[in-house]
Structures are given as structure tokens and as C-alpha cells.
Length: 281
Image (cartoon, rainbow, N blue to C red):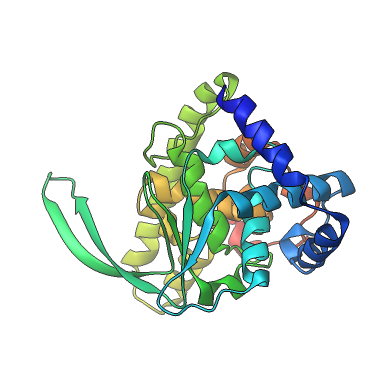
């Protein structure tokens, strides 16, 4: 019943997506480098998913953020990319995106390894709430367009993709049954390796040649060492914005993400090779 209603609503929304509006959105798609190389059929599907995403969510500017049509279209197109072959239902149920002009401060609670609860305040550029909205910093959107390993929209929507399986972010999305066994072997192993590399880099004298080399060998965002939920988000982010780096770091994980998401960004990403000394582990 839910799928029937979703499809019915999608078709109603698309009746308003006329040729003039499609041409307007195509201009934004063409100006986003991380969308380069998509086939014509993929572009059509992305435009339609983005249109439905935009009209299925509230885009709410807060703290005097000046939100333009271009901002909204770009966010919607980037949000549609991870679920290009999964559909918007893969994000689960949420209704709102809160757009801040700059980074924002949020209260955090966490429990350490000894079971002690801690509270802190942290400045963030984005956040995805369980059973709640997605928060984005408008000032970071300009950096979220290129093949540079960073995309705030994809990172936060990856959390929603993760949360769609059981309502919590834990690094275990709603995978097809044939992928689940391999995921439970590959993902924790990659996460543990990433944590070891991050810990090594942190343990070395800051600014030393050894520390710089250790950081350079972290092919994806060190923030992924925070927990498995963040590791999943930075891996999805890297999958679409620096797939070569993710594939260099964790080829089996890149392959599994490709099977899950039904995409292979390696085929359309700008090609580069690491320096020889960075291949040595």
C-alpha cells in the first residue's frame, strides 16, 4: 500500500515537471561536476527524483539563511544521486531540511567505553536526526560540488539511508539479503583498519614527516573513525566524490557499495594515481 501511494504521488508530482522546468533543472545538473558522466537516462531519472525530493520535503531557512532556488535544486539533485537506482523510499521517512547560513552549535550526548555518559557542545556543518530533520550549513554547499572527497548533502543523506534500517544509524543499511553476509565481514574489518590508521596518525608528532605520511595514507575522511555510523557516511560520501580513493583503501567495500547502490562512479570520475610511496602500507 505504501509503495502504491508513493508511486501515485510521484506521478502526480511529475505532471508538473514540464519541459521549461526540466530545462531549468538541467542547467543546474550540468553545472555540478560530480554529476558528470551520467547517461541521458540516468540524468532524466536523477532530475525526476530530485524534483520529487524537493516537493516532498520542507526546505526551511533558519537564522536568516538566504535560500535561493539554485540552492534548493542543487541540494535536491545531490540528495537524489545516492538513491538513483534505489528510489527515494530508501531514505525512510523524514520531512524537513533545516538550512543554516553557517556552521551551527549542537548539544551532544554520548556514552564512553566504560558506560559513562558525557555531554558536550560541538560546532557542526551538518547533522541528521533520528526520526527528525536533516540540518545543513549553507556555507558548505559550495564545497559540495566537486570530485574532492567532500559532499555535505551526500554525507548527511547517507545517515538517513543508514537509519532507514531500524531507525538508528549504525553502519548497517537495509541491504538485500544476498549482500548481508559479505557486508558483516567486510564493513567491520574496514572500519577497524580505518581506526588503526587514524590512531597511528594521531599518535605521531604533529607536523612530522611520519605524521604527514600517516595522514596522507588515510584515503578517506578521518572523521569516519568516530563510529561505524560516521564511517558508513564518509564511505558513501567518498564513493560518489572520490571513488578512486575509496577503492584504493577498501576495494571489497567499494564493490559492496556498488552492488547495494547499483552504481559505479569509478567509471565516470576524473582519473588519478597515488604517488608510489603512498601505496606502501
